[in-house]
Amino acid sequence: TGTMKINKANHLEIGGIDTVSLVEKYGTPLYVYDVSQIKYKVRTFKKTFQDRNIAAQVAYASKAFSCLAIYQLMAKEELSLDVVSGGELYTAIQANYPSKKIHFHGNNKSDSEIIAALDYDIGCFVVDNFHELKKLNEYTIQRKQKVSILLRVTPGVEAHTHDYITTGQTDSKFGFDLNNGQAQQALQSALEMPYIDTMGLHCHIGSQIFETDGFRLAVDKLLTESKKWQELFGFHLRVLNVGGGFGIRYTAEDEPLPIEDYVNNLIDEVQIVSANVQLPMPEIWIEPGRSLVGDAGITLYQVGSQKVIPDVRNYLAIDGGMTDNIRPALYDAKYTGVLANRMEDKIEETYSIAGKCCESGDMLIWDLPLPKADDKDILAVFSTGAYGYAMASNYNRIPRPPVVFVENGQAFLAIKRESYADLMRLECSLY
Ligand code: LLP
Picture 1 (cartoon, protein in one colour):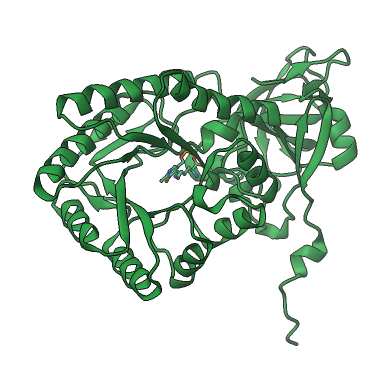
Picture 2 (cartoon, protein in one colour):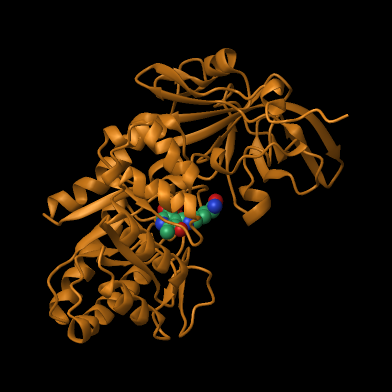
């Protein structure tokens, strides 16, 4: 995808730069982001709404990958922004993100997080539960400060890749349940709160979703309830936020829809159903994370030791693993990869790619066909841009790799490599 190609040296090139030269300059493991691919994704989401003249907000769900540089980029692209913690909020503010474009999520926002968000005067709280609603009411009265909110509701629709399930009662820690009266109760209270403006509703039905049925069902439920609440309390649904979850390709088996299809389907459904239930068309908000940054990122590793178990398996170890990509170990997530320095060499072996952590579960890819590899080779793993760096850890006291942004033949260091000294920075000597 994006600007990746094979260059004349038979190397993988990204953003107009040879990955081998990136490795020479920055070392391994290394996360590389193709900036033009991110821009393409951002612009496609926005343009699809614009082309149909639909009032919309696209917010980057920054949990997928948060750092100063990505916040700066998303701000330049004029996206709204989702943050889910005081740390993400703080980093966004450090990047001069326009605070009115920030939406604050989370199922257990602390007092200090709520106060920080009020101090920064952010655009919107996505209120998750009664505890938060009560606090927000108290703080806003105390401070005589108006805030806009969306109520996060749990519609009883959950999508998992190709399937969705609907349940009367969703067993989830998030949101006000739509099916047991709690959402209605929350809305009724919110509407009576003097400094709280309830702009609309939010739901999020899952991640890495490949079909539109789940979104459509959620839209139907939310609009139908909104109509009821209009009649009951005069509630005016101005914003319908359907969350994120648009799928991307990790391996050849994944078949995500084009962004345009996800968005157009969504628009169609909101238009049809709001006309049916006789509600004015609300603004449509979405919050993609993975689909903006996931397939723009690759990870480059140095190949190291091998263990051949005759007739069973060839293990090929790389100099990273579950510390820079926990997803295979945590979710059984699938990835694919290539030898970036020998792109068109003959495929002769099947390797299972092992990380370097002291843990058998630290396997990145099972049974990957590759040229015969030795320890001068560089393995590139694709689609590591979402929930990779963001979920990286220092397990086994392994420093986190750096992040480089590439575009038009230029590379920019976005996050430095952690040093051993960095690992000691917070530690206190006691004995
Ligand atoms: N909005 C809300 C309320 C969310 O909870 C999420 C993701 C998103 C938006 C963005 O979803 P996306 O477009 O990225 O699918 N660590 C997991 C994914 C967790 C997603 C959590 N919520 C993974 O690596 O697959």
